[in-house]
Length: 309
Image 1 (cartoon, rainbow, N blue to C red):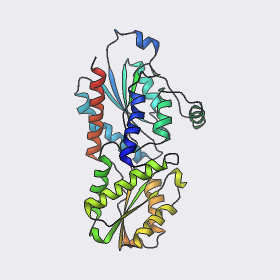
Image 2 (cartoon, one colour):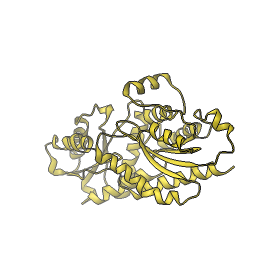
Image 3 (cartoon, rainbow, N blue to C red):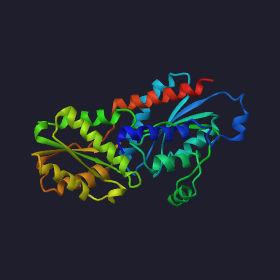
């Protein structure tokens, strides 16, 4: 499936979640039309045991807060983590209910489609019910909460051109001579949605090569699909080094986690035995002003729709 053909289908899937009357809207909320309208933006990310990873996501909230709160349609901006740490999605939604918010605009800071975007977050936020997902979340210790407030989920990061611009900017900063270099993009990956992830990463690689003049690119997964092993990263780097004098390794990961950028990607580079031919900055997609702008524009767009009778 080509990415451009996939986007309308993915967008339609999100419209089914965000445009229909949500399952989480209680009878009391529907009947109490006299309640003052109050909207909150909830920026949701995966979560990590790494404190530095979480801080990079919280920095996004801090960067967009003032501009969002300057809009009369938005009354609060907060962040939540899907798993591993607090504040969780359920914690934040419960807070919004207790504080009398009528609408929550939930912005998933996820790269592209996965079980997290299609299954976990909608179930955690009370948008839909799925017995298998509920059972798994319970085993994982992830709380599910059905809020009184209406919840609108926005599309993911692969819909705008943010990721392509991000990777191109980082590759340009690392490059010495594009004609002598190849790209290695390392992303988390998703077993159930491998086709969509592969399409996204390959197209980012092609567009970056076309824009900056690199001959070609390869990619590797470093997450659950790769069983968190270093070997796929090593193999992708060796593929490039067999063709070109130098490889540029770019993590297509939202933030920096010691396990991924350090142990897995860093370890994969070391295992090539040719680390001197590899450029690597131990960085991530964040920080990125274009992503902050994407959060702001997505939030304002959905807040305006909600506020319009």
